[in-house]
Image (cartoon, rainbow, N blue to C red; front, side):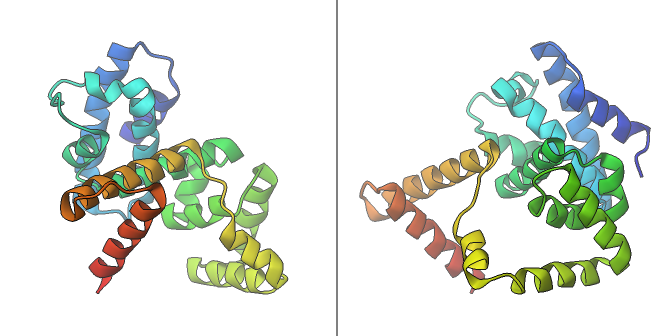
Length: 218
């Protein structure tokens, strides 16, 4: 539900504020949202969705560094973990969903209607407002998230193999996703440099990062 606190956060995401005012108000909002998520979990999609918008606003020009209590040595990942209790990847995912919703015109009310995880599916498949309308209608026709996702997967499998393979092979990354990719490679290369005592190319760092992820899955 979009209650008064969440509406205040939505308004904050769209307001034109001074850097100092953005930092001061942003600190309060991030704390409120983090407490809500910790109490009720990620299932409250609207709160998670709006957190993405707040983090996006605070990341512009590194305004988060102006927040009182932020340590001078903190990196963005430290801020995400310290202020929201969420990992860097989780916060970037929330920012990505918020950004895409703004680009294609999906409203907070629509996100609330279908839920955060379903909204993510819709946004991944949408290039414009017409796509959002089409997929929102499909969701209503299917009647549940599981049936909706199954229908999307079935439609994807029905496409020619070349088209399906191309979709998996070529990705258009947003500015936020590109930055997350670059920061992840940097962290992997730094860790690998300490463990393997060698400088790494971007490709080597990516392989190292994937190997670590796979090891963590076992």
